Image 1 (cartoon, rainbow, N blue to C red):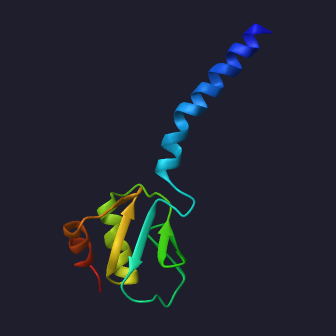
Image 2 (image 1 turned 30 degrees about the vertical axis):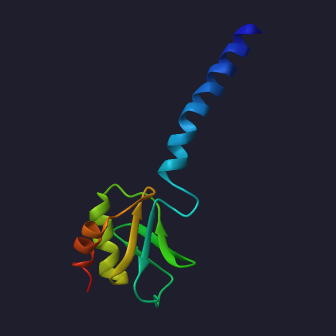
Image 3 (image 1 turned 180 degrees about the vertical axis):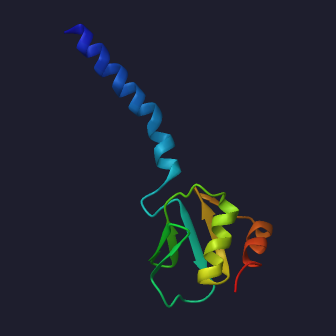
Length: 105
């Protein structure tokens, strides 16, 4: 019986230690958030196997295997220039956003 309790305690400790990583990696609205300058005409689209969905005032998407700046460039090619882009809770600074927006159509 004590062996089972030890295993359960170890499992609970493991889950508690990993919980912060899981929540910071991707929130309920996705890993990426992209706020376009202009109101979009489409509420969803796909860029390189990444599904973007319009939620309130921005597009959101789950984590992709590509670098964050590449993902930003892919969305500006479809949605146009952005006022903000966030990856994993970290907003792009003005320089990074300007470089990304340079790829907009």
